[in-house]
Length: 199
Image (cartoon, rainbow, N blue to C red):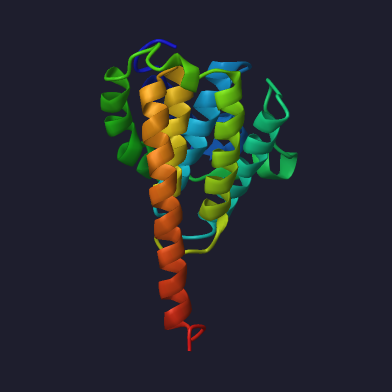
């Protein structure tokens, strides 16, 4: 994938949303192959990372879980059920997502190097990373206050690592999944305590 391809895709999605006054979730699905898969993961996880009012965490987490399952079975062309794919994101939501995530993704992507630690970007590694995407997607779907950001960031790192075949970023993604899991567990304990479950 060419440098900055992910950031450029996000810019195109923003332009499309402005033309159509919104964006269908199906429009976040990438094309066939490794790059399409990576761009799909990136678009969905970037959307999940931004704290938005409403059940967006459940929606994007569920979409990511469906994508992860398709990754596990080796599907090259991704799909979502029609009732989910047709769900539209309002233009202000799309602009908030892109304004928050696009600049730093563009900067990060220019520092990536294809071919680093190639053993971490092959087919077996992709299978293992699919399980991590599934786990992070489950955390995103949970109604944990402020619980979306770190799991979504972990998926973004996985998407960028796969797109650019950079094993060093895979290691960063592994570390981020551990941090996200620990943070989510802590937030669940705090929420349970506040609700009286720990009494």
